[in-house]
Image (cartoon, rainbow, N blue to C red; front, side, top):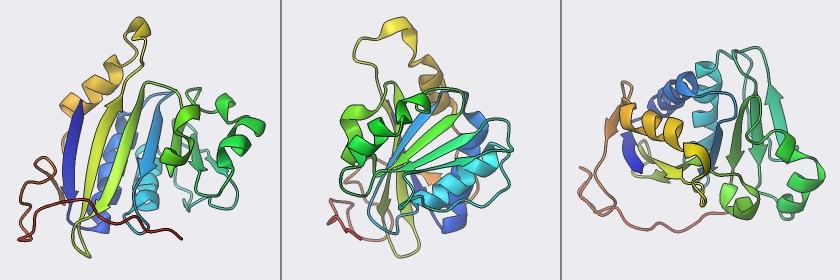
Length: 190
């Protein structure tokens, strides 16, 4: 199951994150992938606000994980950009935070795919224009379908309404209003 949106600004991306954060539950795991500058940390700032967390959120690139408290649930914000992060995730006990009592978000999740629990919500951000972004929300299902644990994610995706400044977008490859078809973009690295 997948939904695709077009955010018209950084504010729209943050509002989308806020709406997601307000709908999440303890044990939710989200993964974020996208090129540099696509709005991953902006989306996480919105998630934090949706959880009622007022403190600032920044990318945890050099610390592996930042914990944000003070809302209805804690937010565990991981960054898997740096080489060897899959080993660090295990050695530092990330499994204690992934899928447990708060909301866990892993940026650059493609680098640690094999270590991540299922089901989870995979969020991919991509450039459209210098101001606009595509945001794709996709359910990554449990291979064993044990106990219908995907149900809450399915309900979230089915009932998700785009906030102001975000519109539902067509499938990749469809025209999106800028005059160019959407297609693969080169991957940027820091």
